[in-house]
Each structure stands twice: as C-alpha cells, then as structure tokens.
Length: 298
Image 1 (cartoon, rainbow, N blue to C red):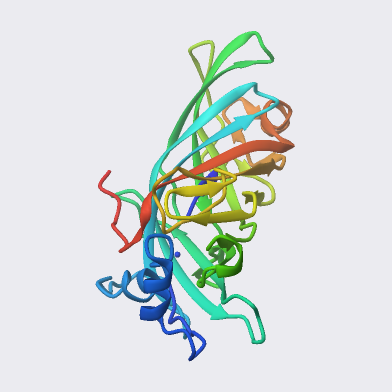
Image 2: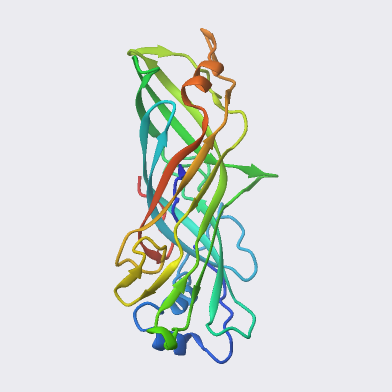
C-alpha cells in the first residue's frame, strides 16, 4: 500500500556533507562500482524542473525520484492487492556521522511524495486507483475500487518517511566491503473504497467511505554488506544499485471504516468486518535506480 504504499513503498534528495578528508570524487574512486553513491546523490536531482504544486523543498535537501510497484495482502479478505507502478518524488538529505569513525557513514533522510495519476486534482499524494476482487466471507464475489492518498496537514502534503545509512568508504581491513544499515519506510495514508459490487450487484457506499483513522505502514529490509556485484544478504536495500531488486517488506494496519452510507444504509461495520485489521503484509519493489523525478504517464 506505499502502499506501499506501497510503495515503497518503495522508494529520495539534499546537499550531501562529507568529511573533508574524503571528497565525493575520492569516495567514488575508492568505491568503484558500489560507491559512486555519493556522486549520484549529489548530481541526480539537478535536472528536476520546478513546478507549481510541488511540495516545498527543505533547506539542505536535494530533489530526486524513483519508481516502485507493490503488493498488499489483506488478511481478512484473503486477497492480494497489486499496487500499480508509481512515480515517487523523493527529497533526500545526507549527513556524514561525526568523527572519529573507522568508516565514513552517510545517514540519509528521505521525504517521499507519490506522483498522482494524470487527471488528479493534485499533482502529488494520490496512488493510482486499485481494482480489487475477493470473496466476501469466503462466499460471495466482491469487487471494489480502492483509493489510497497521502495525508494533508494545514494544506501541506505529509510525506512518507524513508531513513537508511550506508558507508561511503571501503572497509579495507576486511575485504573492501561497504555496509548498509537496516532501512525504515514509515507513514500514514487514507484508504477510500468506491464502486462496490457484491455478487455483481451494486452496493451504494456513498462518496466518502474511508478509514476512520489513517492506515499506518512500516517497512524495512535487513542490514548487510556489499561490494561490486555482491550483496550479503542478497535482500539488503541499496537504492542506488540495480544489480538486484531493492525490496522493502513490512505490514500495514487497516483501521475501521466510516461514512460508508448510501441508499441502502450504513455499511461501514460490514466493510470493517471484511477488510480491517492489523499486520497486513506489504512489499514494495523499487524499479531502477534513484534519479530524476519522472511524472506518471498514466
């Protein structure tokens, strides 16, 4: 649900600050393939175009982008929801950990905004509509359209948060490995349901059938080490490397539904019984490396 929310649900921009003894050029030379990371962070977002409707860019952040797809299991409904590919505007800030450190660690903070599909009222914050088919209570075929949106506070879009850290210098004493800490993608979204049919019969749920409180997501990946062509374990998250898929996994808690009132009455409690619950598995897969933001084409 970066949904993944998912997306990742999955997945980034800011002015990197590096220790003066290790410039970005020197780090890239040391790192060879895996550690051109710092240089990519410093340059990938420069071509991003300014546009009205874009979230404000905080001082010290750099604007970049990525693309991701996801899948969400809804345990009560016993259904897997595939989240279409989304474009993500990613504002990243990097900070080198204070010395003394045996290695140069870059702590990264990301503020993520989902690129809305064409025709949306806002350029950011809306996932593509998701068509879902399931068996209600294991008996009746149910179809619906799920709408996932990021929250707003005082008119401003609330970003999803992505935090991770990696070394920008090789561990020359131990095989020239680089290291990555466990990443954390967290955030809250609103879920709305429309166009509900039960056994091919339309069920009026009104225009504002949504979760009473925000749905919460938390995704991560293991920590590990890497160098050119190698990852240990293979499932560590390296958003600037594309030799293997970058996948974040976690859960989404889906709250009770409210305002599901149509011509046949209030069906909020019925939808809550069918859908709501904690610990629904979610996975977000980053498609390609972090680069310039590309608006959605759909």
